[in-house]
Image (cartoon, rainbow, N blue to C red; front, side, top):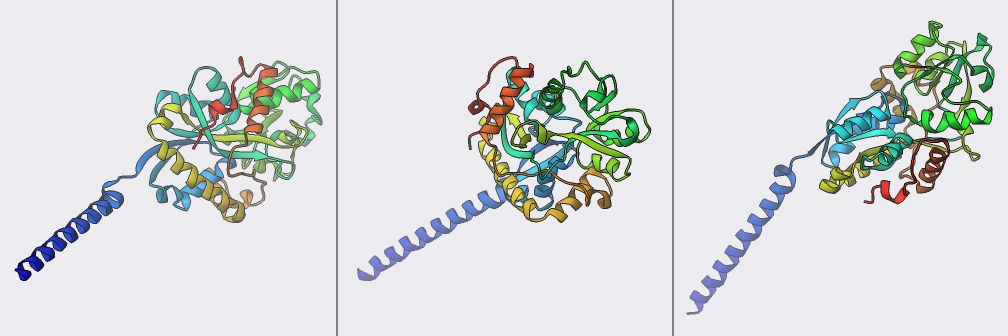
Length: 326
């Protein structure tokens, strides 16, 4: 009788062991094999501001978070947002200003990550002119050809209106704006086909290295403290509602890359050279933006205030509405 009882106990233990092993095996398979990475098409800008994104891709940070990112280049932030609204991409890098404008116009957009910003130690973006052009200050731009990569951008809706008002000028009426993609601007300027251009890294470096060009204004002059928030990652609220884990995974990967970039400047410049197809010898000499680990709501608010003042926004919007909450 005692032997029968022992056999029953052993049989029960065996059944429990099989169940535990089977459950563990199922969990392992489901977690590491059956669960496929989420595919995300991400629209980026071929400029140094995208360096953190490039670094995250190169170092495998997205894959570590279970994301399979496909990078697609776009001409400007507004073009990225158009692709978002059309459903051809799921996420992208855009200027904060066009993202706010899109939200105010009815596109239910959300933003996360500090894409890039400038300060007095990182004077990356500005107005470039030829030294012998006679253009020494902003009033000298009046009536001159001015290269811009797109309307609806940070410079169009915030930077230039602030700057021109200080000199009793009207943006864009007082200059002859010609739309040219960033990669083509150095060629146009070198050919003498334009008097001035709004440019940033790495393309402005090409002109400065010739010794014939100079920067007469940068975004550090927009606000008294010299800080200017520029870009961010954008996506639709619908995508965030359907894939909150993916958005949070992206933020984690991006944050890892911010920390990496801030401690690997030279390696970052090599990555920038690779993605922008510009010689490393030039990229090595350029100044690049700075990045923080998260968006600062106060920075977003003062951009909203500037846009409301100069007509870049038609209505007041709440910062809390547009920033993604992890």
